[in-house]
Image 1 (spheres, helix red, strand yellow):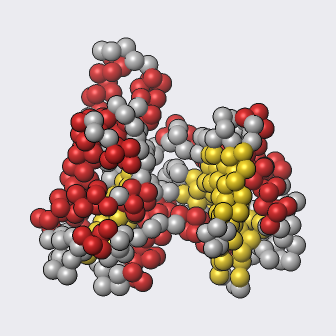
Image 2: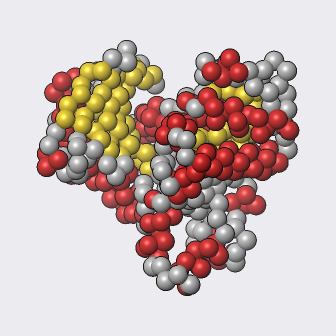
Length: 404
C-alpha cells in the first residue's frame, strides 16, 4: 500500500511517522518513531498502531553522526522491516516567510528561498531543510512537500501583522508571522468534534511545550498570536525568553560587549525556564524540585500565560473557550489548574477531577468558558496537506510506489 512519510527533524533528533493512503483521501497511521541522540548516543525507537514498541536499537556515535545518516538509517528500517515505500514525504518547516502561505511542492528554487529564513529560525530552519536535501539526493524523483508553521496565521489583518516601524521594513518582510500553525490548525480541525458549541466561537489555544505560544481563533481561523517575526517573541519557553524589551539587546551589545552571535545563542539556548531557574528547561524537573528558583520560573510562566490570555481575549472581544495542548499543556495537571485559576476573571471554573483525568473537557458545569485539553497532531496535518497537494497536482504516482 502506498504511504506518506512525515519528517520533523531537529538538531539531535529526527521524528518520523508513516501513514498508509487508504481510498481517495483517507490516511491510516502505520508507525511513529524517532532517532535521537544523533552524534552522541544514537537510538532508534518506534511504535506501531496499537502503541506497542516495535524497535529499540542503539548505535555507536560514529554510525549516526548527523541528521542525514539518521534519516537514511530510519528510512532503510522502514523499507526493510515494514515494507513502507513512501510515494511522497511531508516536512515541517518552521518559517515560510512572506511568500509561502500554504504547503508547497519543494523544488530547488523553493529550497533556496527557504534558506533565506535560517537567521529567523536558527534552531529549526536548518534542521528542517537538511532532510529535504538528503532525500532529494538519494531519491531525486520522490515528491517532497514543505508545510509551514507560519501558514495558518497568514490571514491576519495588517493591524495585527505590523510592527510600529517604518513601512518599507514591512514590505521587506519584517512583520509578525506567528508559529506553531500546524498545531493550531489541527486543534481547529478537532474542535467541532470535541466542543461543537465552541468551534465557531472565540477560542484561545495555548500550545505549551519547550516552545510555547498562544493563538486567538475565531471560527477556526487565526486572528492573532503571541509569536511574531521569529519564534522568540511572546511567552517564555524552555530556553527562549519570550517578550523582552529590544533595549536589552542593544544594552548587551553596546554596553556589555556581547557579539550578535553570542546574544543570539543566549536568547535561543540560555533563557526562559532554564535561565530563570538555573536548573532545567523541563517542567517535570522544575515541578519536582524544592529549589525556590524552580518555583519562581513556574510562577513566571503562569503569570505570562495569564497576561497574554487577556490580550488575546481582548483581540477576540471576549472568550468562549480555552484549549491546552502540546507537551506541557497536555500533561501538567498542576500548571493547567494554576492557569485556569488566573482565568477566573473571564469566568473560568475548573473541574479538578476532570483535569486530573486530562479531559478533554476540564471546565466545571458553572464555568462561563469551556476549558479543554486536546492533544495535538502536527504530523497528521502534514500528511493531510501532503496528500491533498499531490492529489490536486495530479502528481501522486499510481501503482509504482517504490522509492528504494
